Amino acid sequence: MKSLDVKTIIARRVAFELKNGDVVNLGIGLPTLVANYLLQEISVILHSENGFVGLGPIEGSINPNLVNAGGQPVGFIPGAAMFDSAMSFALIRGGHVDVTVLGGLQVDGVGNLANWMVPGKMVPGMGGAMDLVIGAKKVIVAMEHCAKDGSAKMLNKCTLPLTGKAVVTMIVTELGVFTIGRDGFILEEIAEGVSIEALRSKTEATFSVSSDIKLMQGFSQHGSRGYDNIDN
Amino acid sequence: MPKSICIEQVAEFLHDGMVVMFGGFLGVGTPEKIIQVIIDSGVGGITLIANDTAFMDKGVGRLIVSRQVKKAIVSHIGTNPCTGKQMMANEIEVELVPQGTLAERIRCGGAGLGGFLTATGIGTIVETGKQKLIVDGKEYLLETPLRANVAIVKAKKADKLGNLIYDKTARNFNPIIAMAANLVIAEVDEIVEVGMIDPDEVVTPGILVDKIICTGGC
Image (tube, rainbow over all chains, first blue to last red; front, side, top):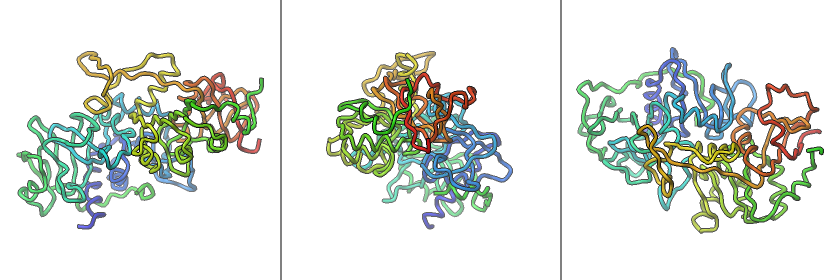
């Protein structure tokens, strides 16, 4: 599987989690791709941490003063609203954002997330991630199942500095969909052609298997809404 | 006294060791002309408060490259490799603050509040050295206000009294920093006569703005 395919699979699956009317914040990178796969019948309102709701495709010319949280030019839909950063984060912390989709470096079975620094190597900063994970009603981590060097990212205990403690609701990778229960990860869906044994070998953390386990949704979904211009 | 000044006069308000807040998110909504004046002035030892350190050639990132910043209080430095390099070499102090906490600390500084309680950062290294309080069974961190000597604001339009309106996501931190500094300088694209901006459309009231620089045809 090529890297692009993996990201597409993850983004498509995450799109199934979004409900009509949800206010959704998509993180930088892979999560941004989710906007490309929103289902036709679902209408969501995208929140951008730099100060607006109603993010949409670019129509007409680019306005350099209208960007998403990654600094890329975007457009807005009719009915959009602009505001300052204090309001933007009041919306986030105040529970007015239904779903946030973020990338992850490590997740563990109590729902801890680490995604903002690797000591001594990479210290980009947390940006808005720490506010998003404590404020959004549902926190979806969208990430490749293993790191580039093949090491596991779903762990019994995170080793990197945390972004949030016990904050993750769901993890979507190219191999499966997991939720967090009282005893750790629960496998809810598994990708077509992947065995539970193969999945265990790529997952450091122990996980239980839902009695209602399903095949992962979204493999044949083509629900592009024309948001290709915010694809990075 | 007229608030409108020419760009060169900004240098009179700069001094070594000053604490400066800048509007902008990855350089969008940052007053580039005033940044150039700060670079040309050569003032050093600046404490910079902004959302991020932008890019090496854009926004406040240029002040990192010119080595005029002693300390940066920001939420993100990942887009400016120069900040990370100087941080690793102990040439700059970086205080990383969650973005919502940064915005609210500035808002407190401008709103006369002694701080606020937030769950952001609980269970992370952000809580190091901070007081924890429990309200209705939920744990919060006490975060303290931020203020500056000077706030450098970018707006789309001002009237001659300094009432400001912004353009799209170039608003970001600008209205908040305009409340939290002893001196507020706004760089705007256009200045109009008093009364030309509908009072309902004003985002930053002119009483907060001390000096206006017009970079457009005005």
